[in-house]
Image (cartoon, rainbow, N blue to C red; front, side, top):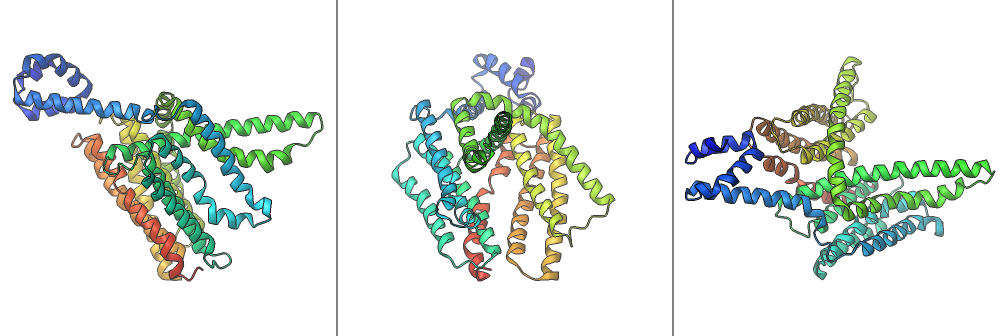
Length: 425
C-alpha cells in the first residue's frame, strides 16, 4: 500500500478509498511514509486526521478510567457498600412502617438506584455544586410530585409516570456520567455502551448470587434449619439493589476486563438474537397471530423493539471498525426486522386507538413507538451507508445517540402532563 499512497498523494478520492478499504494498514503505512511526503498539503491533512482518530480510540479505551485520581479504589468500594445499604434500606422502608409496598415502589422506585449512581460520577469528576443542585433538585421535585398527587386506585397514569420518571433519572445519570458534556457524540455513545456493559455484568452477578442462595438453602436444609425466610426478606432485596452497584464498581476498577468480554458476548449474542427474531416473525405469520386485538402480544412487540434497539447499539459499538464485518450485516438485518415489528405495532396501536378510544397507555405507547420508529429508520439508513462504505462508523454512532434528548422530552410529557390530562386515572 505504501506505493499506492505515494502514487496518489495528490488524489484525495483514491486516498480516502485506500483508507476505507483497510484503515489499520493505511494508518501504519502512512505513518511510516509521512517524513517523506509531509511537504504535500494533503499529507499534512491526513496526518492531523489520523492523529485525531487515534485520540478518539484512546479516549474510548480510557474513558472509564477518567477521574481515577479523584476517587481511590478504596473509596469506590466504600461508596458501593454504603450506597447498596442505603438503597436496600429505602426499599425495605415500607415493611418497617407497614406501608403498601407496591405503592411505595411505584412512587419512589425511579429515585433510588440511578440517583445513587449519578452521585458516584459527580464525586468522580469533582463536579461543582451547580451540577449537584441541577440533578438532585429534579429528583426531589419528581419524588414530591409522585408522592403528593391524588392518584386514583389502579391508576394507569401513576404507573406511566413511574416508568417515565425512570427514563428521566436515567438521563440524569447519563449527564453525570459524561460530566455534562452534552455536545460530545463520543460521550453519549460511551454512556450507551456503559449501559450494555453494566447489564451484562449485573446479569452475571445475579446468576452467581442465585447459585449462592440455592447452595446456602440446600446446606442449611441438610441440618434442618430454615433460612429461606431470612434470605427472601433481606438478602434478596439487598442483593438485587447491590448487583448493579457492584457491577459499576467492577467496571470502574478494572475497565479493560469488561472491554474485552463485552465485544465477545455481543458477537455471540447478536446472531442468536437474529435467529430468535426471524423465528418469531415466521411463526407469528404462520399461526396468523393478530396483535391488533391482543394486548399482551402488543406489549411483547414493544419489549422486543426496545431489546433489539439495545442490542444494535451495544453490538455496533464493539464491532464497528470494519464495514465488511458480517456482524454489521447481521445488525442491519436485525434493524430491518425491528422496523417491520415497529410498523405492525404502530398499526395495532392506531387501530386500538380508533376502536377503543383514547387512553393513557395508548397515548404513551404510540409516542414511544413513533420515536423508536424514527430512530430505527435513521439508524438503518446509516448502517446501509456504512456497509456500502459511504459513511463512517462515527456517523452511525451519532444516529444512535442523537435522539436521547427527544426521549427525555417525551418522558417529561408522559410523566408530568399526562396524569393531569387524564385526571390521574
